[in-house]
Image (cartoon, rainbow, N blue to C red; front, side, top):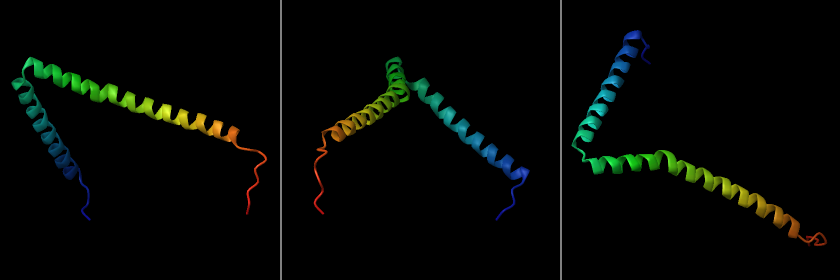
Length: 87
């Protein structure tokens, strides 16, 4: 196993920075080439992905848990208390 040195950490951070800068340059070039309509569509799609979709998933889970809890309480109340298991 290689020993971690300050130089290896510096090299790693420099590589991460270079990769981030490449992605940022690519994104900037992409935004420059896009029409205003395409920018609006991309912004709306990003807003949907970041805000609306997680909210919908959380509400779905909350209502499913609520449904299971209410269903379990009604099922427990409907059981016949005089029923005996035959075993």
